[in-house]
Image (cartoon, rainbow, N blue to C red; front, side, top):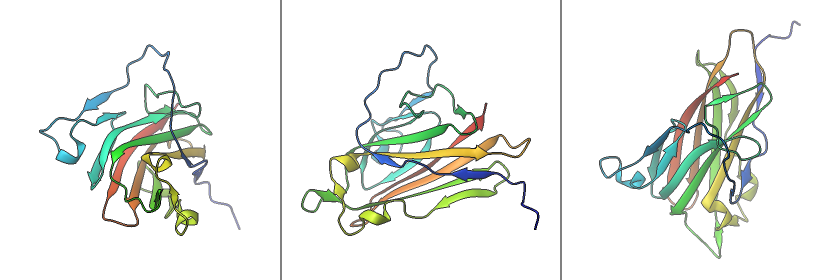
Length: 180
């Protein structure tokens, strides 16, 4: 049987935790400060890298893209095999039980033609019963990497969703990136 020449992609290294870094890059990252004219759940949040985001039941502090070294991405571009992380920093919102938060996360990567190349339904399923430390759940990082691409397929859409399994709170959105 002939192996299809479609792209293979993988979601790797999903991480939680604080992301401390300094940027020495001179290029500006596109920033969208959200004002009261926008959705009130986003009021005051800083959204970078043209991330399209919708928030319900939590207070988002910021959303942005970084590379594997947690340096901010000035452009939504990566090489084949390079990871891109979307970082979601929360002010408040996830339900806490005994110092734990119970969140789920999903991610899908699509080509510009709409073909799904990766689909992960619940990345934090292993933490469903024991939960995550509530402090760690305030910063969620989801990674995406294209490991191989067909010639001419250079543009991708990443759809993500992080939700509270104990309430209706969620953060969902999408961003676009292209291969260098």
